[in-house]
Image (cartoon, rainbow, N blue to C red; front, side, top):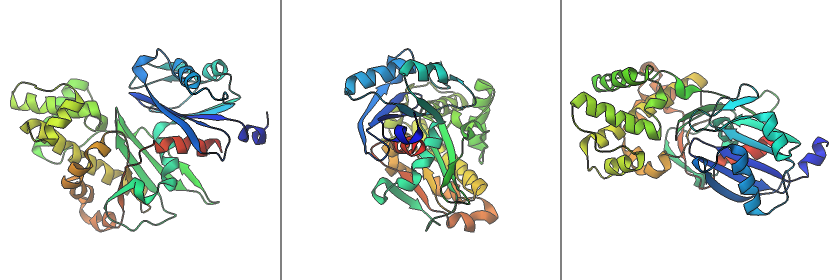
Length: 323
């Protein structure tokens, strides 16, 4: 089957995280995304079963090709998901689903590809700006893990998305309190990576570290209940854990912005932040983002956005990758 004939056939796109798998169907390369659904990863033994259930549920023509973004490094044929139980061979999955083509990307690379498609009403401007249209863009976002990517302009036009595992970079402390928390996390995990704080589970681990430092009992063990207590200011250490979360995120986002020279914008994605946008705006996030000494004036020129799109933009990114 030629590339032109593939473009005219139905396709499947997916955004696979540690907790949920989001799918959409597209009639052909220029068609809108349809039948967007979210399936919990824990409900299916493997990715192929989740895809088959989705396709049976929507009752549309089977796709000829697919592009899936995974919260995982993609370095070869074998995929072992970092934050859920799925493991598979890309080629075996292609054959099992009867696809002519299956493209697998890192999920934040998929989201990065979609950044140019985001509308103003899908973004919350947090500071800085205006963006330079043809400059690098940075992307970071907490979910079940911490996604990191970027989008680089290409000499002949278009964009290249970075495949990054920056969420596993070592996290650094700026205060005595942060140092104590990271020391607890290092003892617990062996390596205090950014993801050990900047993720849904990481918020709980940060809270547990604070309880260990202060020698007090742990009241919360699940991210949603901990976040609710923090946002309601119903528990001092829960609130402090969220404050540390925002501070560390600002520091990491600032590091990424300087590393990429992200004068095209810094984008915050992932599933955690949109639910607490108000608290993010009131937090120390922007101050920690800017707190880079002599580089503060440069960072003040870089716009920072929270992605608030209702539908996963990574699905658009995967459709663009197939096109």
